[in-house]
Length: 190
Image 1 (cartoon, rainbow, N blue to C red):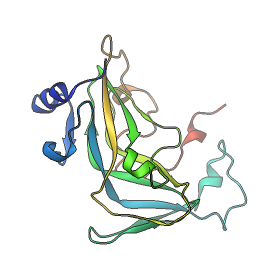
Image 2 (spheres, rainbow, N blue to C red):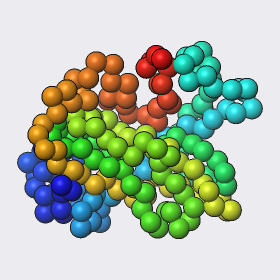
Image 3 (cartoon, rainbow, N blue to C red):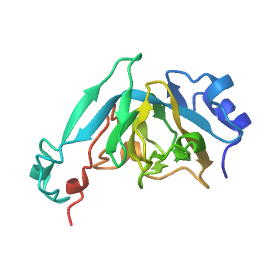
């Protein structure tokens, strides 16, 4: 069951769902979702320095990306065809009986900006700032400004609380992340 605006507000008021900084509900709360804003940090791929990525070899990840931080009044130019990692402004804490789906906002999609390539799910028990896997599939560069409402979270009530939420999962690779984070697939093993 997807939470309505009424239930999202209730969960925020009860601090069952915690969003920092607190969202401006007049602007960010939709009928069944909460808009989340773009942060100031981006990771760009050094594709001219790497011949390949071996998902199971952590050494091929060394120097793979470069962190780019911009000021609130600046913008990041997302070039056509460019793939980057970005991070949300908000830190999200989700209880053990709620999951969430990250969805792109249609206004960005109409510019050709994809918000996530595959990782559109936030596990129960997650805490941190969410990494966005962004790509410009359009023909023109697009300016990305910190604080822009870039995506939305739709919260889903689980049938029962998770036995092992993400916060208690052994080897939770992305718990507590605060910067855009590269793949840690190599930690999975084969």
